[in-house]
Length: 594
Image (tube, rainbow, N blue to C red; front, side):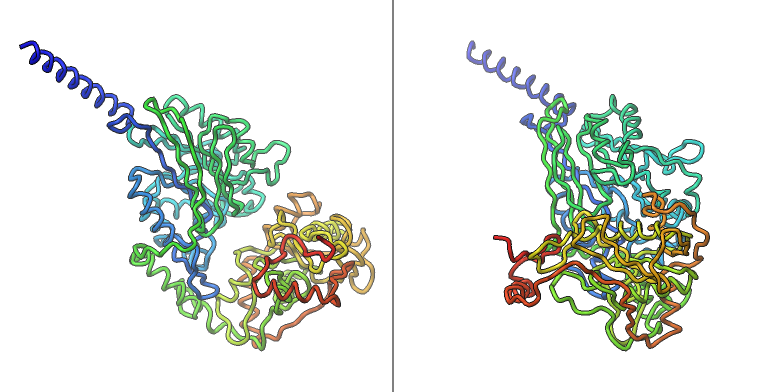
């Protein structure tokens, strides 16, 4: 009798413990064993229209990127963590012929990027600067197709209302409440100030906007995530850091996860208790954040990994989607000469060339197009001069491998040499201002030192920031430090005087972000093209085929001795070209180094 009573009491006690445990489990969202809760967050950004894993300008499948590979990884993670968060930090709807030349010019169509994002079941999206490229109304029409919240805490209309309707969203996963705040670089008016609606839009300091949003949600959430479409360091506002991820962290240490974007570089670090991550472009990587929470939803541990999608197989679900498949086929038809956008020919009838426009690189991975005048850059600058009526033109080789092949040209070839949908500006400058601009451009090179067998490039200066000029003759002396390299500038057969006035043409981005953003030019634009530079190139090719490769050879690099007579140089270059040793892109091989 006594034994039975003891067992009854024991079973009753166990029952009470189980009930209490279940109640605690329901409240704290932990496992039956009261284990810590794992919150997994997958962050993407800067996908730039790359759904298919396909280079439209090359007509080739890629092997290391695309939402079709991203989908594979997300599916794998969802099997392990069904309640994970999938979020994106902007620059989605721009970047391919499909997005830029068909769907963004016809925003009433269902946008393939929104179809893809909806298919992957994104939980939030934060505006990127390239979402604004076609003006506010177009952006709103496209993003209205999203089945998830679109965030822009620091972007407001003239009445002070969020442009996207919200600056944050609060989501719940198994009882854990997560606040997600989205901000974009406030520098958009510098680049796209002339686009529809931008002048009437308020762009606030990102760090201040984040602080204000945190005040609204801090008592309502367990975890704070900030998506910031900007880099770690200030791009323009070095004094106040309004466009800086670092300043967001400095002002808001309570953030658990900060996702950076915009610069297309991998970031993987911890700042205090905050995980900080960023990925490259075109869905090449995923940032995987993991927070471990105790029964009271306090973060007790955390980790971050950047997942490289190279080698991941393609998930065919996106490619089988009717709308995405139609968009892909329509783009290829447009490139090959069909009416992909319903407005005319896309490419095969554009024209032809008599030979390739880019010389072969002496050293694998070191673009000749940035070491001397080439037909590709001569063509772009020539077309800009013809359309603008300017005296001098400046343009960049956006991609090191850009080329026009021998034979027939289609629209993909034009996109290859001019990737962005820029317009052309003309501005009056002085000789001194032009030379200062040229010095800024020449900063992309590393200084040559004795024994260097190749010219190399400062990794802090992306290739698209290096402009080459037509309309003046000049030399770049790489034995000199930055700021003192431009020599012997000749304009109309005579040395260019500081007080000489001349007309310069540049694309709208370069005018806003460099000429004005860095205070290099005091004058204002006096003319803007009604069509894009890419469209100008299309028209020129149509009217002047077959094109012959032309160069002016109006500039050259001086002050270097690349040791071309030394047999050791030839051996090193041979090994580079065979892939046996690394390409010396950001640091020269030096024969005198140990």
